[in-house]
Length: 450
Image 1: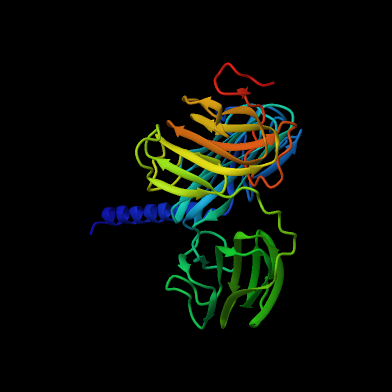
Image 2: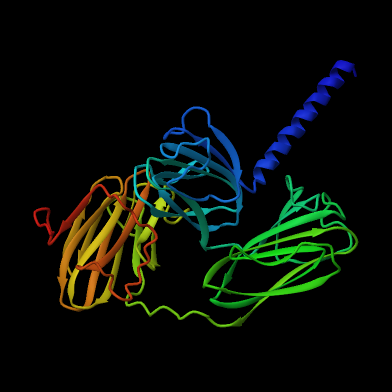
């Protein structure tokens, strides 16, 4: 083979290794890449580009950096993360505008001047790495930008293990795999690509736990750290023989994020994690809700025609689906409709029912239509008032989605603005500065209530 061909082959190999390394680095990103601009539309070249561990900023009336304006600035955060398969709720708080994208699909879009408020969106994610992008701008006054997420259903019981050929969890993992448990006593290498000594591992999972106090026990030779519900409860990051450590923590009912980090210096390598519930709920249980689940009938058309494709119980009408489907692989992401029905026991009094939707909505209470906005529109707030005699009340809400972002939420208060006790309808999105408000005292567009 000629020297020229050898040189070209060597150059090709170096380029391939560089590309593969860059890809692995991106997949293993443990922090956000943040770009800040001295304008409100992310235009031009960023003034600064930095790494940030968390997207959790409350700048008040200040600036993110001495080089950035106090007002009229924007920012973009990007990150590639591994998610176990399941339904996730993304929670965004902002003052002023924000957009959130998952794999380049918009799930939250509130790009307008506003005061501090929070918006949520539920989305199903297949197991694997996903690109997250957040765009934000500040107009004036206080500045707030915060994004996080939580697994809400369908999570995997597996642990995601990322292995590194160093003791500091740095760079790209040389091995990533799903594991049923953390219970190892290695006398050699954990895997063909991993060192027998001088390696580290990060395990992550979401555990489905009942509310109560749990005792977590780790055993390690050498260093170990454990986070439960994003709290560091065990920190023994040092060389040591196989030693066990315990910590107690109270958790709420549902999915709890757990992360364990470990490093091996030399000799025998031991890493194990167990947990057990040691007592019941430490905080008083909330009062039993008056309402039960809604009956939700989902259709793959915009006019509730034919037979529903899916019928299920929904604990609340409180959905911001973004650009995703309410039920992946069953319901369209666009051009679908839903009918929710429920009988609720309400005390006598004057009530205001409020619906936030994108697109069409109709609401009936006790056989009276309070809201009729059966048209295509961006997210708007509609409300209607009614006097109820007390006792069981039939409520029906119909909704259709045309295209783009999808949102459907329903709540009610007494006429003086208080929420009836035990209403049982959590508000995960509080929108301030709504552009449209329609309040009616009866059916039809001619009846209004002030």
